[in-house]
Amino acid sequence: MLVIAVETAGMDGDKVPWTGRRHDDDSTESTGAPSAQGLFDAIFHALHDGEQVAIGFDCELSLPAGDDAADSDALLARARGVEAGQGVTELRHLVQELGRWRPWTIVTTSLPRWRATTSILLWEAVSGSGAAGSPLDAIEAFFDTVRAGDQQDVGEPAQPVVNLAAAAALDSEVSTDPAELTRPPLRVPVGAKATAR
Image 1 (tube, helix red, strand yellow):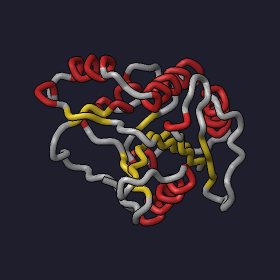
Image 2 (tube, one colour; image 1 turned 90 degrees about the vertical axis):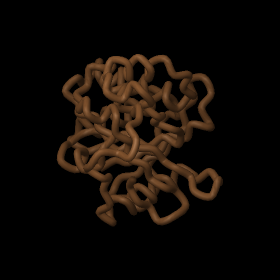
Image 3 (cartoon, helix red, strand yellow; image 1 turned 120 degrees about the vertical axis):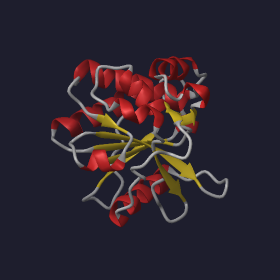
């Protein structure tokens, strides 16, 4: 298992700061090149070696669905049209590249689905108390979530959302569950006891 945290605040042009750690390694991974290509290379090689990969972004990965909740085409169009920050832009680019080079890759935003497959999990790192957590904090919070066995609710969410990560996957050549488009992505609180929501 390779867990990666992308630091969106440090993005500038092709610069994409990220940190990774494997489940069997208590130290920080060598991040490789802090670029979109460096991030893709690390993920590609981990998948090639049969590892699961979890990639966290410290930015909003969903927005309210509103009146379009029952219309997947309208939701996808809305997701494409949203003025996303650099984090979502990089996520879209990454998923498009994975679809180009590994179209059989399964991409999910659901922790239970990810646990059942050798695939990619896209998750949102949520800083607590208004303070930004570091990428290492986000990675540790993710491992806490997995160790605790926390899972997202499998029922209907209180309010349908547009899951921007799922939309990016559906717009690419990777394999993803269309039902995730209206379900919240895994959200991992950073700086507090991690629970999935």
